[in-house]
Image 1: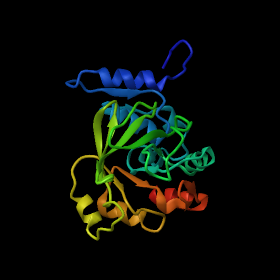
Image 2 (image 1 turned 30 degrees about the horizontal axis):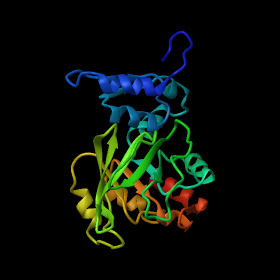
Image 3 (image 1 turned 120 degrees about the horizontal axis):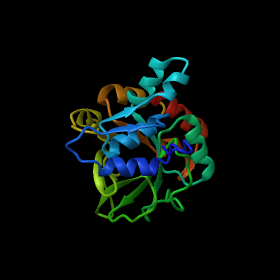
Image 4 (image 1 turned 30 degrees about the vertical axis):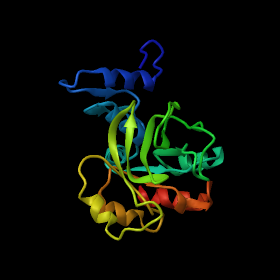
Length: 234
């Protein structure tokens, strides 16, 4: 926070957090208003966040604290249109995903504009490139398609694992497999309004990710299903 103007530059804050020595306890202060702000600080390397104004303004501070820190992050992926990004943000998503792999009908024209209340995620298969997104979701290329699982990167550093279904296949043991994983897990594959709450209860993931189940057609979101999915996941 610039104390002369009280304006907050989150990118500067996160750069400072990322540069801090790892043998110190690092606290990210100022402007943590939504779940994505806390997640951004966590992924940059913060050990804690200082929350003040958001709690003082909240009608129920305990509920607000739980919303900021306890629930899984909710990602809506496969976004290709500004109006779909807007609906995802309004519904309460924490991460918005843009598939930039060439071989998919869900390929976005780029990382579309989004507010700082969400984290943007660029999704690649194989090699990735700089896009300006907050995070990169990267899958290996196997037999011309994405690998089953991927990784989430921040500035080239792995910060979470993405546990997904095999390419165009089901796996009855998917949730049990994910539940046994260690570290930060983003659960993906077959999630939608009907099953995301149960999946969260079984796996207890750090984040959940849905795309094709929220569509009217490839790359075109069903706004009612987006809202229902986010509500069920939160």
